[in-house]
Amino acid sequence: MSAEEKVEEKIALPVGVTLDRFIKRKQEDFPFASGELSQLLRDIALAAKIVNREVNRAGLVDITGAFGAENVQGESQQKLDVVAHIRFIRALKNGGEVAGIVSEEVEDIICTGNEWSKYVVAMDPLDGSSNIDVNVSIGTIFSVYRRITPVGTAPTMADFLQGGEAQVAAGYILYGSSTILVYTTGHGVSGFTYEHSLGEFFLSHAHITTPTTGKIYSCNEGNLSEFPETIQRQVESYRQRGFAARYIGSLVGDFHRNLLKGGIYLYPPTKKAPNGKLRLLYEGYPLAFLVEQAGGAATDGTRRILDIEPESLHQRVPLYIGSLELVEGITGGDGG
Image (cartoon, rainbow, N blue to C red; front, side, top):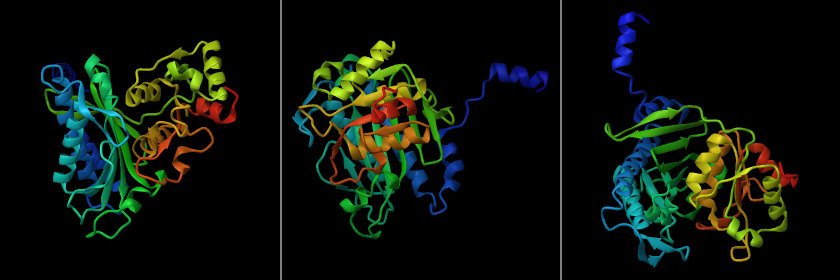
């Protein structure tokens, strides 16, 4: 690099690779694709920008607090849950590349009217939304499938119940101190940070790999007495070995931290939720796909998450996810 180029580098730092450009470069990873999946991912990014704006002004307008209704899970909806749901559904409908959507917020498949589209999406529009009132990180999780029903027809449950191995893309958006979109298409994991002044996501975390082990565990220890005895012993083992307990009640936030730093997230079955509380299609599957692409693992305690056969759209599952050695410690019972 010449002296002149070095001066230019100092006074005008390159902004880097945008998400849009990155997606276009990676389109060749899909021999069957002709641009639809790339456009779909850009539509998700657009909705993320809009939701990011809503999150940032949540304390200034009346979108914090409870909405006054329950979602299909029987959980109290927050106003921002509803806002995020509307924003993502609208973006995916208008984008034209998605035939159907399953959302945590509604019971049935949402048909977009784009019956000639090749893809369907399962998503949690806003995970951890109860944290918004206290300014703690929240997120969006999404999973993309290539539909198996004929194009030109309405999507059915069969399109969504293909199993975790059939995902063609998955990711999450974390709305925190910065907003970051992390996704995989089965060719590694990449992260993009939102630059507000330019209105673009830029590549900030290329080729994400998670440490094979770590010293962080994340679980709701308020429910410890309801955990299976084997998991109670695991948690005690973590304490004895000097692990740090980190849990903020936002799956995306806890997962993202452990993905980068190494650790394990645990949401076991309890007496109140004997089948687990997290949803397989739009929480378990997409995060399991991501973590495996990054070198980690995900299990329900006995089975690999991506091997579980789906039975319903809102099926629940226990989840242990994170660094490979720590997750193997759950299935092997040796504490990692």
